[in-house]
Image 1 (tube, helix red, strand yellow):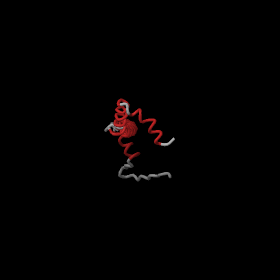
Image 2 (image 1 turned 135 degrees about the vertical axis):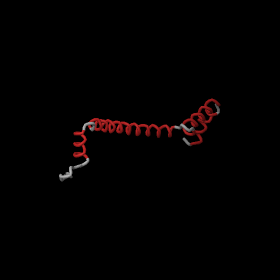
Image 3 (image 1 turned 90 degrees about the horizontal axis):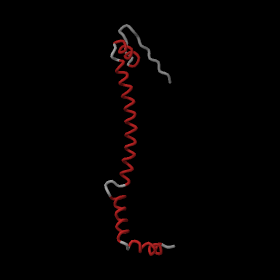
Image 4 (image 1 turned 180 degrees about the vertical axis):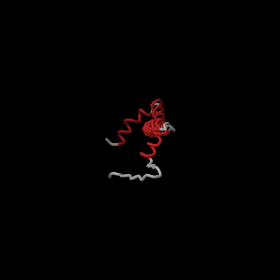
Length: 100
């Protein structure tokens, strides 16, 4: 079936003004509008990415909040400084060993 035969078969449907108006409306809504299908899909993917980043930030915030709650006591401050920030007293030597 050639393209001309196909066009002759479909052309009578487009002579109907309601079908023609509906087709033009759908093409405009799906492809030409500011909220077309492509922008909706990209916004949804960005929303998923931002949601996953939000979850990661919330877990980091919870971890930091728990550390901050522990640091209210002087003994915990010294322990945290020695273990995580490698602070030392004046008469000490600190050896840091990293495993590969």
